[in-house]
Image (cartoon, rainbow, N blue to C red; front, top):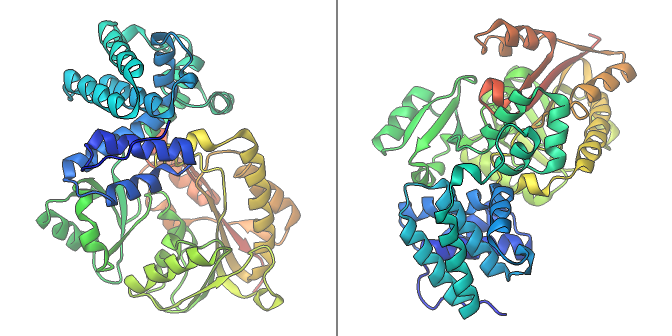
Length: 458
């Protein structure tokens, strides 16, 4: 059955449906499909927020929604057409999680969508399923914490393999907190461009524009926007900020390059950490920014130009095989390694469903290879900072242990500046040891791993 194209401006829920179909049928990334969907229509801020909530929520909580639908349907969910399947998911998401919305309106909109994208039988099915749901006692429909694996897998909606991995790594209460963190809205993280403004000045500018923001708890350039993020594009071109996670902002501070030094950013694009390094260097020195993909390097160059930074040279290259001329080049090297991304699942609603167990080993191998190659590019007496946005031992501590065993001229070194950002002794001690693993359920930021190494010599 071909999907009928709306002849007039579609409703917010219909736009959400079309975006979800792009993700399901074409494999589009949710964040890109959402941006494209919002850009194609003239929408007020309330509709943009509703569409974003429905799209991300329906994808994020898909395991819970499908579990409920399996109990409400008299046929397998997979047998329904993609439009009807997504109409049921997005409508059930609203009924279950968005209690501020009128239930009757949600059901009515679902029926209207079923009329457009289905036939009389699926219209009746849609109406019947949603009304049956409203008659049930919702508190008893999803597994509770007495069966912790089912609770994590279904109620909190995480793939079974990931639940098993986390439960093998941490106590159940920490796994539960980790999963809950990534199911909640955390606000939008910004990093202030201190070459042009200060955090205090920019907070005042945001307040004038009715953008509610607060200072981040760790990096001194960090801001968290809690309301009004839709107004930020009007400020972006000024170059006073960039979007970057709170924990990610600690990487440049861990390396802490001095002005005038030579720096390599081995996996640089799209340039969040690269431009931060340039800020700390006061836009003085040389930064060689490498990435395999030229189109991503163009984004880096655009970001640098927007922020008034001119010490970055972008080059498409494989960081595992740089020319001999770059051996012993860097006073400081940052390797923000490719990884499984399990520390940032909250940023991309579909990420949890795209990951597979094999990704952990594959990314550990790749990042380990890059780390060993990076050793050659650091001059004696120089520093190498290795970071990932994941929480697995294979990609983090095990990689570093293997590296230190193979490279006896490298030593863990204290991240003295970073230690000063933490109020508690546990994290200060970790930073001073040269290892730091940030965890959402403990630190309230994305999962992130940082290690600082020094190459012995002059």
